[in-house]
Amino acid sequence: MSFSLKGFMFIGFFAIHVVVYSQNDTDAFFIRDIYSHTLTQGDAYHWLTYLSEDIGGRLAGSQNAQLAVDYTKNVMEGLLLDEVRLQTCEVPSWKRGQNELAAVVGSSSLGTHLLQITSLGNSIGSGSPGIYGQIIEVMTLDQLKAMPEELIKGKIVFFNRPMDPTKINTFHAYGGAVDQRARGPAEAAKKGAIATLVRSMTTRTDDVPHTGVSVFNEGERHIPAMAVSTNDADLLSTLLKTEDVYVYMENHCSLEPSTSSYNVIGEIKGSEYPEEIIVVGGHLDSWDLGGGAHDDGAGCVHALQVLATLKALNYVPKRTIRCVMFMNEENGLGGALAYEKESNEKGEYHMAAIESDAGGFTPRGFGVGGLAKAMEEKFPNIREWVDLLGSYGLFIEPGGGGADINPLKSQGGLLFGLKPDSQRYFDFHHTANDRIEAVNQRELELGAAAMTSLVYLLDTYGIGTPP
Image 1: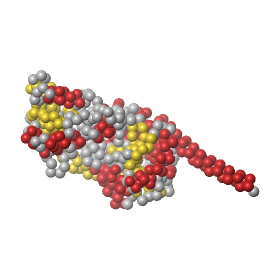
Image 2: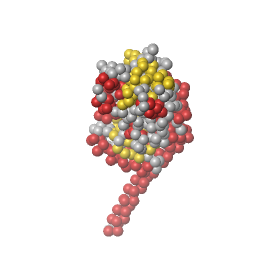
Image 3: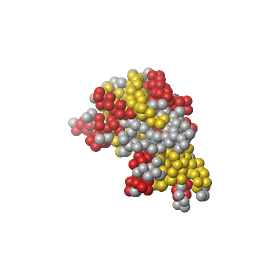
Image 4: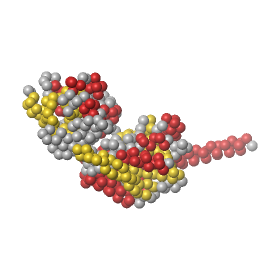
């Protein structure tokens, strides 16, 4: 009797472990298939080449942005998804104009020196004949706010705080410096400045200017605002130590009335829990200087490849898997806000939202965010996947999301941000050099495979009871 009971217990214990082993084995083999397909038959690099080179920069509200909408909608329709649609959103209409230039004029040591510059988003134009004024160097917004107005009035404020090169994660360095670009021009205008120059947001020292948005709140005075290359920023700072420096600036930007554009949405309906949504996405708009390859064409094709790979592997998801090409992340979040509004009105539940908006470099892992309660209850469940994803060099850690998916946090799911290696991202970010040749095909495909693997695990196991 005792022997039989022990034997029964052993058989039961063995059976449980066989089931667990079998399931882990199934997961490992399917993830292997995801990588194999993506790395040998994926279309992400082809799609990105078209977005970056055949269409080019895709500033929200522009003709190129509409071409990108049409193209990605056609790609989704070709994947034979259950639903493909456009979602209307309102976006600003800012136009760069022609003949941007800035130069040091009348320097006792340099004479005239042409600066490498580009206008910042939401800048107004100086028009002809341009603006001429003395520059004054400022390192922080707090320093500017503490300065007397008479010292700033009628001058060109030069913001020159570098990104901190000691930060290993360059996004942390960017976060520590970008306020001078985002809010510097508006704060300088309050003090009577006639224009601003802002050091480009990059850890490199080179001659490439980086654009990006400057934020002017309703009722604030707009002034011309330009980014200057890091080499020229260092030059200006050195000159200011020995002489007063005067700069001529000219640009012809304009702010037009807002216009309509679209998010592009495609999905595969869930077979068991269709009301639980897993969304993957990137932002379709980009700045107009280059091709928007890393920012964020890479994120868009990552998301498209997720659905393409699952379809190619004949995977039938339990939950609804949705792909969204968000419009207007760069200068307004019009697409993200329209998506959130419609989703909340429908009472949807996004169990998980995954955004890729950090470039097409080698993926390192995923950051995870959400409401405190969601993180407490649901994050421990996904920690169980560390070994499976760790085989591909991927981590899962707290601290993630993305500008386009953050509005979905209130629904109580988890938000994931793909985290590629960040060291070279700000070499290309918001520049004319952000083109397809800056993207390594294999690194791009590895990012798509990583996202697809996470989607598979989220769909297979869920993350806990919906709120």
